[in-house]
Length: 142
Image 1 (tube, rainbow, N blue to C red):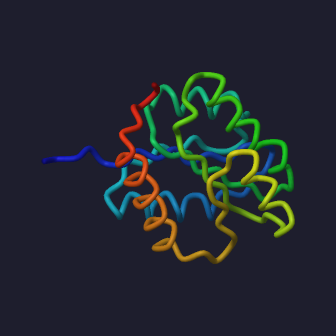
Image 2 (image 1 turned 135 degrees about the vertical axis):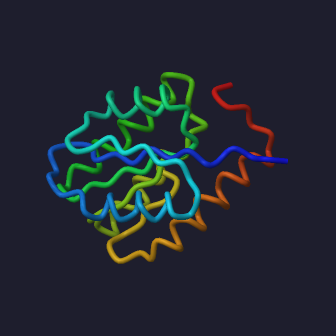
Image 3 (image 1 turned 180 degrees about the horizontal axis):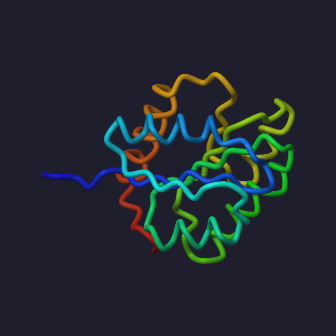
């Protein structure tokens, strides 16, 4: 049985101009056999939602260093839900204060990876999460 590779969209919402971390993660996911779409810098939540739906991804990874994550990450989650794509796994990374993490998770962000998280941990998490959801028989965009 040939399973299709996990498709991941890596996006940098907001005005944050640093994408080294996002590129490192994107490359690591590619090396692990995932299909990675990288949207580049300064994307609006709406652009990210649109790209995620067009690319038919299972995972959206958001990276934010600018401090606007409390607005940007939930806006992406809400945008996906509004478009009937609430089954897409939304992950966050970057400089996220510990006290914001529970609030982001309440808003629908599945996991937050801080600076220095080993890419192997991110890869493992994505594989497990996609597997879990596949096991539940959740249809894509259903």
